[in-house]
Image (cartoon, rainbow, N blue to C red; front, top):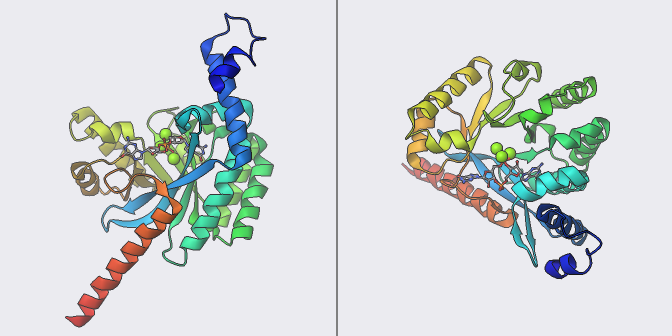
Length: 290
Ligand code: C2E
Ligand code: MG
Ligand code: MG
Ligand code: MG
C-alpha cells in the first residue's frame, strides 16, 4: 500500500522529510499509474442558458478515484500534475475524450464543450495548437463547438507565441473563456487584449450574492463590465433558484451549478440531452395540436 511504500520503499529519505513531500511523492506514483491504466475519467457538467433553461454546453471535469487513496480532487492532483509535467498527458486525455464525446452529442443537440487548460500546457504553444487542430479534424467536432477555459494566471507572462496561438484558434472559431473570474490577477486591460469570448464568474461570488450586499454589487458590476466589453457571462456554482433569478434579472446569459446538475458521466449527460429533446418534442406536439 501507499503507507507501506512510505515505510519501506521510500526509506532512503531521512525522517525529517516533510510529510507533504512524502504524500506528493506517493500521489505522483499513483497518478502516473492511473494515467497508464486509463483510470482518469471525464465527467460533464451542463451549462444552461439562464432564460430558456436549456443546456448549451458541457464542461469537462477530470475525475480520479484511486483504489487506495479513494477520490482525489482535481484541486489536489492538477497542481501536482502541473509540477511534475503529467499535466500534458492529462490535458491530452481530456482534450481527445471530451471532443470525441461532444462530436457524438452534436447529433442530439448543438452543445459546446468547455475544456479547462492549465497555464503550464501553454509553455509548448505550437505543440498544443497543432494537437488541438488535429483533435478537431480527427473527431470532426466543429471548432465553433470548443470553448477553452483558462485562468488569469495564463496572462501573467504573455509572450508573442501565446498571442499568436490564441488569435489563430480564435480565427478557427474556437471560444476562449476566462475562468474563476475575480479571484486572480486583476489588471482588467487584459480582457480586451486577449479577445475572450466568455467570462466565468467564480462561484465564491455567486455563493454569497443573495445574502451579502457587497458580493451582489460585485456581481452586478462584473455583469455590466462584461456587457460593455461584449463578453458573454457564465455564473459558476448556482445552487438555488434565488441565485438563478438574481442573475437572470441582471441579464447573465449562462449558468452552471448543482441547482441544474452536478458533473455526471457521459452516458448520464446523454440522457439529460435526450430528456430535454424529448420534452421539447412534447411541447411542439402540444402546440401543434392546439
Ligand atoms: P473549474 O474549472 O472552475 O470548475 C468548476 C468547479 O466547480 C468544478 O469542481 C465543479 O464540480 C464545481 N461546481 C460546479 N457547480 C458547483 C456548485 O453548484 N457548487 C459547488 N460547491 N461546486 C460546484 P471540480 O470538478 O472539483 O474541479 C475543480 C477545478 O479543477 C476546476 O475548477 C479546474 O480548475 C480543475 N480541473 C478539473 N478538471 C480539469 C481538467 O481537465 N484540466 C485542468 N487543467 N483543470 C481541471
Ligand atoms: Mg472551468
Ligand atoms: Mg471556475
Ligand atoms: Mg476553479
